[in-house]
View 1: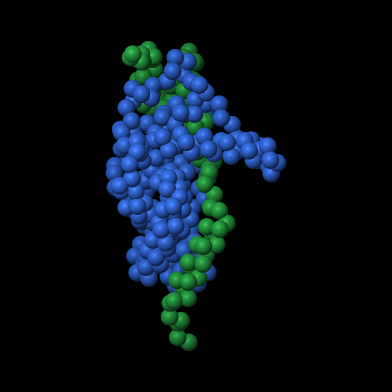
View 2 (view 1 turned 120 degrees about the vertical axis):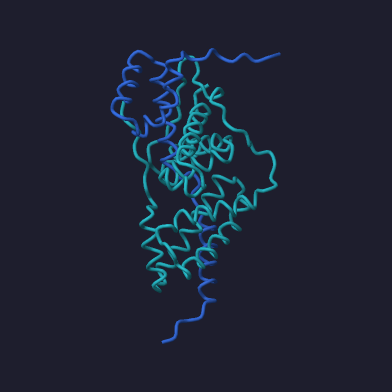
Amino acid sequence: MTTRRPPRPPARCLALLNRLSRYIDDELTPRQRRVIDAHCRDCARCKRMIAGLQRTVSLYRAGPFTPMPERTRARARARIALLLDRQPRPKR
Amino acid sequence: MPAVTKRRVEHPSDEYAELITTAAAGDPRALERLLMKAQEVAYRFSHTVCGGPSDAEDVMQDALLKTFRYVKQIRDPHAFRTWLYRTVRTACLMKRRRRTGEPQRVLSLDDLLPTHDGGAVRVDAAEPGRNPEALAVNAALRRRLSTALHALPPAYRTIVFLREMEGLSTKDVARTLKMSESNVKMRLHRARLFLRKELEDR
C-alpha cells in the first residue's frame, strides 16, 4: 500500500515559504514584509503557518527544558574544588 | 504580523569575555564562576543535542579541564564563547561516534510543507507557579518539545540548540560549526518547519 502525499500548497505560498523564518526574525526589507502581509490577508494557510512557526520558536526560546539537577551541580562544584586545590598557591 | 519576541540572552559573549579576563588576572571567584558556566554549557549540550545523560559527566569534565587551560593561555577573550561550544560539541561527537539509530538524513523541504489548513501548534505552557498542576503541564510540555527536538537529525538539532536555546547569533553559530551563515539560516529554517510540524495538533 502506498501513502499518498497531501496536495502541494499553491505555488505562491511555496514561494513565500522559504522567507518565513526571515520574516519572523525581522530580517526582511519593509517591501518584502509588505508582500507577505498582503498575501496573508487572503491566505489563511500561510497566516496559520507563520503563527505556528512563531509559537514554535517562542517555545524553544523560553527554555531551558533540561535544568541541571542539584546532585549534578554538587559534583560539578566538587570537580572545581579538586582542580583548584591541586594548583600551586601563589607566592606571597 | 509582529516579528517573534527576541530570545532571552542569558549568556552574552561579553559576559564570558569579562569573566575570562578577570579570571586570567587571578580572581578566584571569577575562575570558579567560569568553570561552572563551562560545565553548565557542557551539561545542556550533552542533554539537548547528544541525548546521552551517561555521557554528560565526561563531557562536563572535559569542558572543565579545557576551560581551565584556556584561561592560563588566554588569547582572545571574545572568542571564548564560540571556542567553548565548539569544544563541547567535539567532546559530545567523540562520545557519540559509534552510537546508532540516530536520524542522519537531510531534511527535504517537500516533507515539511504545511498541511491543507496550515496546521496549528497548540501546545501551551501553564502559568508560572509552583502548584502541582502547572508543574505537571510544564513537565509535559518539556517532554513534548524534547521529543520533537530529538526527532531532528543531530546537525539541525545543534543549530536549534545554539541559536534558539543558547541565544548565539547566526554569525557565532556559523563560526562554532565552521559553516557559512547562509547554510546556518537554511538549516535553521528547515528545522523550525520540522519542529512546527511535529508540534502540530494532529
